[in-house]
Amino acid sequence: MTGCLVREPYWTKQLPLADDQKSMLTKLNALIDGARVSSWLADADWPAEDPESYRKHRTQRDERRLEAIRHAERMVLLGLLTEPQAAFVLQHYLVDRQWRVLHDHNVQELLGMTESQKQKLVEVAARERSKESRLNLMSVDPQEQKQNQARLAAITNEYNSGLKDVLTARQLQQWSRLTAEQPALSEPRNLPALQGADVEELSPTFDAIEAEGSHLDLSADQKRLLKELEEVARVGLLWIKARADQPVNGRGQTDSRDNRISQLRAEFLMHAEQVALEGILTENQAEKIRAAMNKT
Image (cartoon, rainbow, N blue to C red; front, side, top):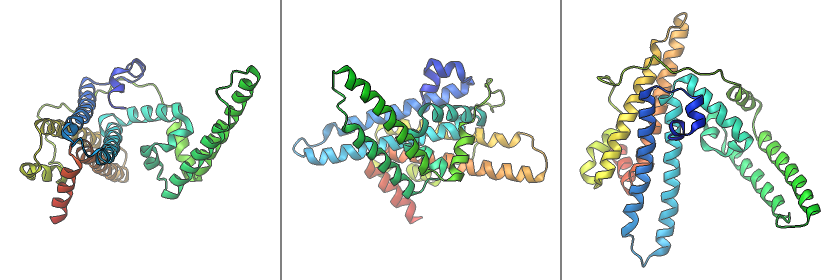
C-alpha cells in the first residue's frame, strides 16, 4: 500500500495525488525496500557452522520486516493521504479482499478485535484448510472436477460466513461504514508546502536513536534510512496538523477536531517509531533503544 499507490495503473487513475504526496510515498516505499536489503547484507557474515541459529534469526527477521511494512501502511493512511483519500483506499482494500481481510493485523486494530476473536479467525481458517484437504483437486475426471468446484464454492461461503460471525454487532456496523462506497476524488490542493515547514520535535524514540547512535554501530545505510524516515514522519505530522485549519461549526466541534488531530498525530508517530525499530534497526539495536528509553 505504499509504493503501489504511486506505481500501479489502477491507483494512478483512481487516486489523484499531489506531487509532494507522490514524493513521500515513494520515499517511504524506498526506505522499506532499502531496510530489507540492508538486513540481508548484514546477514552475509552469519557463521556457516550454525545453520539452526540462522534459521531462527531469519524467521524473526522476516517477522520484523512484515511488521515494519504493516506500520508503514498505517503511516500512509493516517498522515500521508488526506482523510478522503484514506477512506477511499481503505474501502477498496476491504471490499476487494472481502472477509478474509480480517486476518490483516491493521484491520484487526481498526476494528478493535480481541485476542479471543483473533484466535477464532485462526480456527475458522484451519477448518477451511481441513475441508479443502479432503478434496481430490488433482483429479482429471470431469465429473469429479465439477463436484470439487461446487464443494470449493460451498467451503468458501462457509469460510466467509465463519469469519463474519466472529465480529460483534458494533464491529459489523464499523465494517459497513468502512466499506461504504466513497465519492470520486480530486487532487488535494490544501497541503502545506514542505519547504520551511516548522514541525515539532519527534518522539523520544527518535531522540534516543540519535543519542545512542555511537553505541549502536549503525551502518551508513541505516543512518540514511533513519534520516529519510524522519523526514517522512515530519511531513506526515505537518499534514495532520494542517487539518486544524479546516473550518468547523461551534466550539464543541473545534475541541472534538483538535482532540482527534492530537490522537492521529500520536498514532502516526507511534507507527513511524515502529518502522524504525522493526524495519531499520536490528533486533539488538532496537533492544538497546528500548532499554535506554526505560532508564529515562
